[in-house]
Image (cartoon, rainbow, N blue to C red; front, top):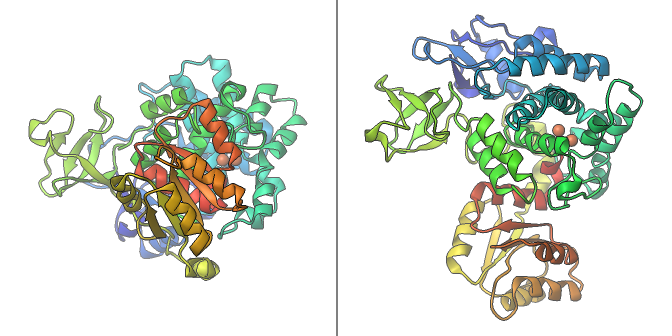
Length: 487
Ligand SMILES: [Fe+2]
Ligand SMILES: [Fe+2]
């Protein structure tokens, strides 16, 4: 069995794993032969792809982390907001995962746009239970985490669905409403006798960041309960790897890189470590491209998370990338269906493009201020050509630019610079009443004092050097546009 990207599915291919949908009529059973109509349906509804059975990949075994039946009941329980059924599904899910020989979430996503929230909650529960098991929490705690994860976004049902499903950027007022969903979720659960107080707390705190920049209460570090830390991290991971009407999916490898860069800033570092050991960057069944140009399918895990066993499409040869000396210089450079520059899914989203037309007409202007020229070039390269980027080599040049040309949409500011350092430059701008310019600081070190100063000048974010392109790109989008931070 292997995973085939939606645009590479062809009539005649045989489905290897059931495609579960809330609407029973949209389900596609295992063993069914695909026809054009079914493929069009998958294309139009935002599926990433499907598992296919063929001779080439018949030895690839993909571990079923959780039974199909459990996932199906989970989607139903969450969509009905039935707390009793959610608690039952939670214990099924914990039971399924406790029986695994090796805890590894190998399944790639099989959900549609339509089923997003329900499927998302079940995925978050699968990841959260896997992480909690890895962290060796007690059975009772793991069960509570499963319930909290399934319930974490229940509060969204109290918010106008037009705002939840809005394709374009959110206004400040709309984002303020979205930020209420953890509290609403807490209130829904308050009336239920079946869930404990730690479960409610976890739901309330699932958008809190390690450094205090999250919502609704801006809690930091140890103030955030462990259940919430786990759910927060896997929640973001699931949102990153999913396809939404307004964004393409990140590959598991890129999403894990994002998590790693966000450790101690957004996420708890030990939670991120545990995630890396239970979520594979290259799960069996995934297509990959190697740095020597060969295309292959991943066939099995090895002890090295980024060097699995693969089978080469052209030669049919099986290679253990962790052992084979001939391949010691060869790396995986791309994972199958995740296209680097994919921005908006083109299948049936004409209306969406129309809505976003205005937004796209003007490229956003980003100033990169850094006394190191190489660093400017690297930051520019990471952001691609989506923005108008101006590189400046000092704080003074930045102050002059803003005075002459007006406010940019974002300043990415190196802190450590001679004469005016990054912090002083932004303090000067704020003094001159440029209060609305978005700022992201780049820094080699983030201690408490630094974090406080960032807050005092209302910086959106700070990023540790050396900068990972995946992390930078995503944080820039979040700073410029609230769409990404709402899952
Ligand atoms: Fe949420
Ligand atoms: Fe969520």
